[in-house]
Amino acid sequence: MYLMESRFKRLLDAVVFVNSSANNKSSGRNWGGINKKKNFNYSKCRFLKMPNIVKVLFSGYSSAVSEKEDENLPYVHANCSCVLVTGSTNLIVDTMTPWDRDRILKALNSNGLSPDDINYVVSTHGHSDHTGNNNLFLKAKHIVGFAISVKDQYFLHPFDRDIPFDISEGIQVIPTPGHTADDVSIIVNTENLGTVVIAGDIFEREEDIEHPEVWRACGSINPSQQENSRAIIASLADYIVPGHGPMFRVTDTMKKKLSRNGIGCHQ
Image 1: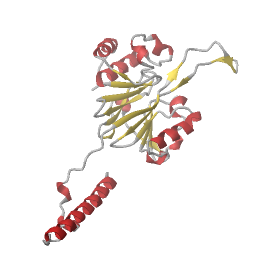
Image 2: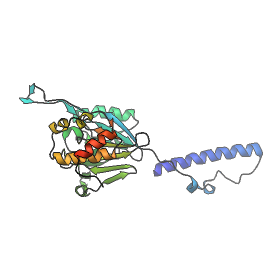
Image 3: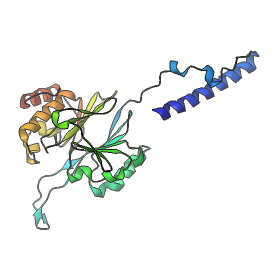
């Protein structure tokens, strides 16, 4: 914000100087040095706040268990949704697998960003398809589930007492356990979409609202807790980015259905 204001002040100086010079030439008046910084009251200027923008870089996916085997084990195909949030701060949510490094770098570059421009990396939980490229972002603060860290510093935040973590204006991280013991979701207030919640694997994809066996089959350490987290998220969201599917709009019907399944509400 400081850099933005500094650049804006320099722009105002240039505009005032040009206008002053033009007026002096056209009227012959002495404008008393209005182009001088000390005579311009910047405190009366309202600096525009950058709106938060949510962009899904990659929509996640998952498949049923394959009948084939590799290394003598059955397998599924899966990768998570990767989301970029810009505006009051820059953050990336869920960095996919280590084999997606080049895809993420290319997507950032197409949005005019490099890894060093990211202020926060948030992994909704610690599974490998959600953390694979966190090490690209060495200038960012990292949030992985309930853990907040920079280098070897770990910051103690009471997610376990249902306390949200404020990243910046209009962006919060809230505890939403169930899929794992320490899932988090990111709430982003936007101008164009309303409230977007990036929910990780608390929601597998939109279809799991009508067919809850979908998310249950994908693993849940505490299904009743996950039901509650799903109800909380739905009550807050206009749109949800699920862990393994495209972003979807939350309808009143969805909210009612999920509230009946949930056992509480977020304060």
